[in-house]
Image (cartoon, rainbow over the protein chains, first blue to last red):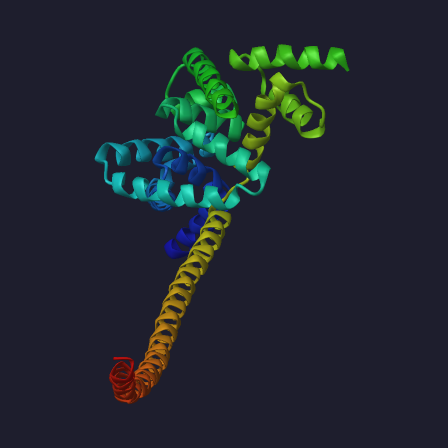
Length: 172
Length: 150
């Protein structure tokens, strides 16, 4: 009986969590830069969520909760500075890929934008990712970031202005 | 059309102040997606909004396939490098081999020419010596004519 219930839980868990994986991964990569580190982070977050599955039913917004867990996990990773070397090598790979893609102009523009975002401070990066790329509401973002909504708006405004400035400099 | 551009400019100003709603941001995205002719000063925003759209569609599997593609091209470059090194090695070795052959050929020709010149010089010098022997008779003739003149 108990194993059956567990099985049900696992199915439900995968059903609910799986669609979020890509979003969690993109956020993790935005924060950690390295592709591999982001993949590891998503795996770790999945395990954390699975361990907390009994509490998950109480969470009204599961996705926002998963994003918060991902954010905190990535912050911890950055504090550990475990992946500093990885991020360095990753930048090399990205440069390489950029050279190949330069033929295709649109692809190049996306790469430029990606690099400009990557050059921003971490909280700017995260807000741009959550709002402009993943299109979360301000309410959700405030929940994920554990900030007030006004604070989110003020910081996001600065982030957007900084990004536009960077992009203009790149174009000229 | 002008009105539309004005509205877009207003929305961009609102966007930069983080005052736009998700619907308004969607409106900006679809405006830049569907328009070809865009004022020059708005082009940067087009790149930004269209880029956001692209960046939101990447997922785990797509990423790994992209990495594979770059890896493949990298290995292709490695083969190019190896091929280039081989070509250089081949051409230089062929050149050196050829120049070696050339020098032996030249040497042979030079030796032949030396032998020929030595033979010619010998012949010439022997001819010269033959002729000097005959010059004695001129001296005799000289002395005999002197006799008669005196």
